[in-house]
Length: 342
Image 1 (cartoon, rainbow, N blue to C red):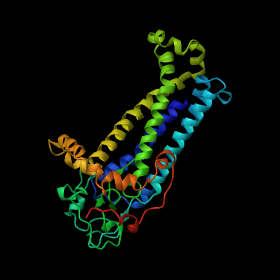
Image 2: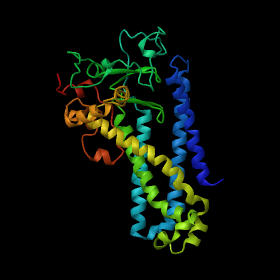
Image 3: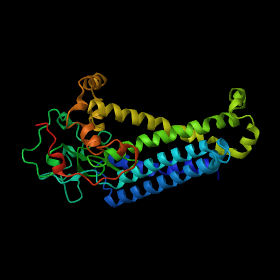
Image 4: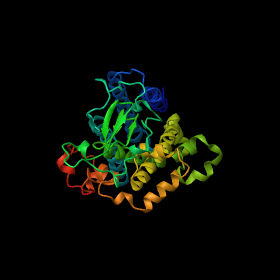
């Protein structure tokens, strides 16, 4: 079995936890235990680890020797090695940080849920679901410009909005959304890890496309070889060396497109100071796009308690924290109490 087939198989295997989460979202009344969720998360982590290992094999043992012969004795080869390891390390560690960091689970006094986090009343609005955004009540909008925290906060949940996740069956502080590909919510403590994982994964896939696209065209699209001849004067030998592995560009492209969209969407929502859940709620209205434009023009992201400031910049006080996979201890209420937005 070729490595390309292995990559496609692993990508397909990762859809199992996604299907479980979709079942929870479509029918929140399903009694899928948290133990099942833990097993699914384990499968995700193992799948991501295997994909990461396969990516390193493709880069160091298959494509890099073709792109740069004898890369260890070439400055250009070392540039490839350092860049690839930098992106891979950031992507991998930020993924693990996101998965294993408490997103901000909290207990809401008076919430009508049982010991498993399930609503006691089947008609409870917590059961309402639309792609995992829970109750569609507009009052749940997390616009910090108008949000009023408790006067004497004792916990972070007293400072910021708390939403209920129908998949995790837990309340989450400053929840952005539930991500099935990390098996948990992106909230106040782990959103920065989630965003950096998505961005670095996209950068890595773009780099892989640049590295492999010419050889795919050379080996699999003979009708346009002439356009690529300057890049591969000895293409018959290269194609024999790469074999079917040259087709890896297909699954890479399949991952790059949605990740590029996801990265761009998250950046736009940061500037509009909208969570992913709020964005999904806004799609009910015909003016959702105008609303995003207006919020960006009003510079909502500059508010001290905006999503950009609280979920990202507050967690990453120095620009170097964006360049290296730094894990930070979760901030507490005293770290946020200085945020002036009352």
